[in-house]
Image 1 (cartoon, rainbow, N blue to C red):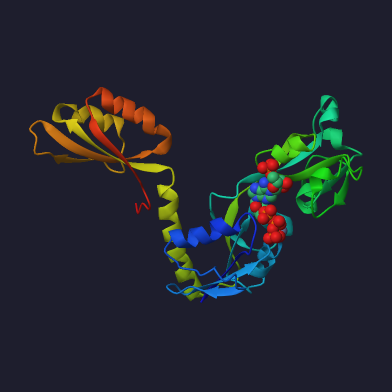
Image 2 (cartoon, rainbow, N blue to C red):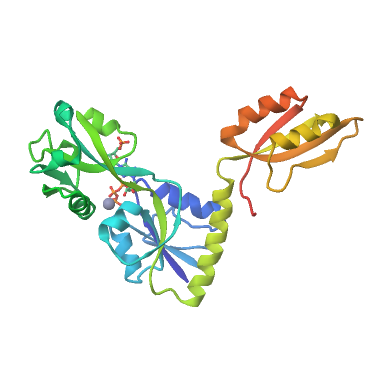
Amino acid sequence: MLRVAIQSKGRLNEESTALFQEIGISVDDSKRKFLSQSANFPLEVLYMRDDDIPQVVASGTASLGIVGLNEVEEKGVNVEIVERLGFGGCRISLAIPKAEAADYDGPQYFNGKRIATSYPNILRKYLADNGIDAKIEIITGSVEIAPAAGIADAIFDIVSSGGTLVSNGLKEVEKVFWSEAVLIAGPGLTDEDRKYLDEIRFRLDSVKVSRGKKYLLMNLPQASVEEAVKILPAMRSPTIMPLAADGWCSMHSVVNEADLWDKIRQLKAIGAEGILVLNVDKIIP
Ligand code: PRT
Ligand code: ZN
């Protein structure tokens, strides 16, 4: 039985449980239990604070975990990063009061300064790598108010939209560490654990490959097929099926959502009609 530690509440909880659903592993989180067993996969979910997840996985209490890479790096434990999961994206940055920003001339600015953070280990390493001698003030909550409260001259904290910094009169001056949610594995996995982990990875990959992809169907004049094949690079090549109407066919392909409207414009220009755009759930290459 694989035990997976995930965040019980907070930013990563919802997307972690949604991920299990996407890969066909049912997990009942409605009762907010501490431990909950899947009905259709040999897996149980252990709900806990994100700060504890790296250690719980490193010690083998849980075989796997879903947690921010920032927590893994900060705790410095021996776990394997199995997959980057593509959600919970953020960075840890150095920020200073906006009023001081004109004086900012690079990381050496922080020499002799006091920096408030909940990530002292990541910060310590950054300071050492850059030869900066600064004082680290460890704060566990609301780091962004430290400069205004006179506790520190600068902060080293998580940023995603940057809105919190702006509303606290701070300016981000160095982006130090990039993070996202990751699937981690402990050192003591059995052969059976590995087998189930492989199955989870296989399913995760099919979900990841399908992200940002759309399935496109259209009617196309037979004469435009060659042009259309150049516009639509499918996994092998687009699927083409004859239509009852003479001189027309139906063409199917998968495209990146980012290119969708550009492709549609090009396809219309060569006579495509009745274009349908569908969501793609999974792709098994
Ligand atoms: O209770 P527990 O200990 O489990 O949760 P927590 O309060 O420690 O963590 P939580 O739920 O806030 O975040 C969990 C993880 O989400 C973090 O470890 C990161 O990996 C990731 N993450 C992604 C973030 C953010 N984005 C984020 N924006 N974690 C925190 N923030 C904070 C940020 O510090 C700022 O104060 O959200 C605020 C808003 O950010 P802006 O830049 O969008 O304004
Ligand atoms: Zn936490």
